[in-house]
Length: 336
Image 1 (cartoon, one colour):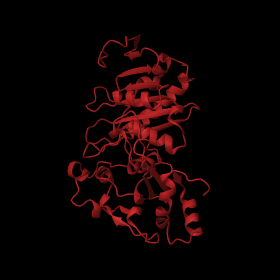
Image 2 (image 1 turned 90 degrees about the horizontal axis):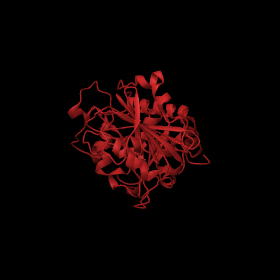
Image 3 (image 1 turned 180 degrees about the horizontal axis):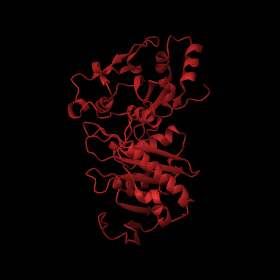
Image 4 (image 1 turned 60 degrees about the horizontal axis):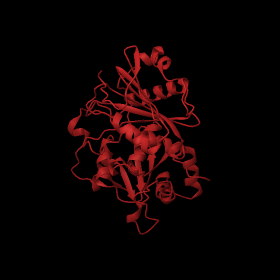
């Protein structure tokens, strides 16, 4: 493996395992942790964390921590959150085991509870092993006894994290071309109406994949880079609320894992969420994208209203077949 990738295909993982003379792919996970730490981006703490997991389909997935200067610390992405998002983006149905460079914090131990049968998840903490040949794993139940999680709040039929979701969201305007025809068309960043329509579709798909059983407020974000490549991420809730991962962070995980490069290469973003949702992502998405990639076009789509925003111009408000420019200095009401 010449260059470490965020997703290692099952056949490649088996090949590397055999070349190193390891008994199983699971034994390969700890060996990849230290190289993976170099992929982390923690400009605030300078503390590089990596988690390397084995999916049920035999693929290996990497997760690293991401920090965002200028934003509150709780917008950071933990390595374990990155890992699970990476699995979700690549449609891996479950995580069997993972090795991590440091003991998972309480925040991440709680986030892992959103998986099916989380107590059986096997964990290897490399910083606690003095012998590199010691590749023993311990179940999550050993480091999080008496847990609180989905089993306390949801029925057995509700899909959990990494399981297939369909939130039944649709945008009839998007389907019949109305949004496309009323959009700005083309902007100074080279974002055309055709590409922004693809961006909207990706954000809608991400919202339909969203794990939001506690609030009932699914959402999704898609970002597009200067080459027109699109990366999408879904909002992921935790039963404990605070460890939930926002859709912007999830989309940025997809961007980083997909080799997107520096955030400044992002030229457009789209958010899909419910109209008048109790848990809203729009303001957070605006703040996040403004600081992460100042030269962006952000499109916010709701089930009833559509708002098209540009970083340098007044927002264009579209609703019920009408559109008009709004005064940025005046308060804006989504329900108007």
